[in-house]
Length: 364
Image (tube, rainbow, N blue to C red; front, side):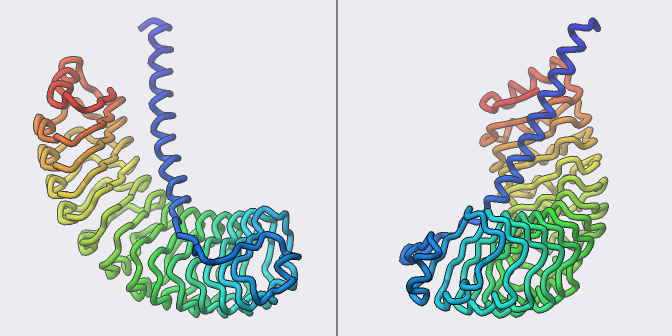
């Protein structure tokens, strides 16, 4: 191979790597923007603190975002009827010790600051429903965090949490728990008490084992355990029959549950870079699957049952060890995109795949 060809090949590989990395980055960013909470239309928004303090009992929504605040003024507790507070994008390092006196607060936006902890009085915010406290420097949460009984959504990703308090399991109404990109090595033992939980994001942590209590969260719809240190996915995973999105990417999973096909509602399965050698035959039972991503593995053969995935729209098998695909892929009438770059397909096999999937966008 001459130098020109080698350079072209290197450029192609680099382009593929950048493309896949971009897809991963976009998916993570999308997750960070996932809180899509509708703002109450009937609340008057105050953006000026001095104006708001003229009649503090009248103020229900105070927006001090991007105000270059280093501390919250002591007058903040004068807003006794405050329901929504936005102090995001500032330089806050702590909250006032009496912050919990804002008893009517329901929604708190405090992301993109420098907080390292929360005052014990924080648990006094018993009407708090939604907390957006991501992108801070939180190292811990108060031990009495579980007293926030009204909490339904907690977004605390991109912090420095090494553990979660046991009391967090006492939140009866929590639906979304997002603590991805922290330093967690374990989760509380009674996670199964969170009966209302629907979305659990534990990705980009340091979990060595699959948290067994998750198996009792039978109403879970989204489970993200990507970017951890898992080596085994127990068959008990199949108890989570309502799962729609499952991401196990960037773990070391040479073996995958044989009966994965029992997850009939699964729409999105992420298996990036898991050291997978094979996919189970039962994968064809995933009747609702729309997206299957398994690039950067060691797959040599794809089971013929993949042709039974009638809802499949996108497949990514980039950088595996494939030399062929089963002819049953011709049954994938809804397939729009197929990424199979950096495999071992001959020119004849590539042409065969194109003929089997004439309507799909195929990237070799």
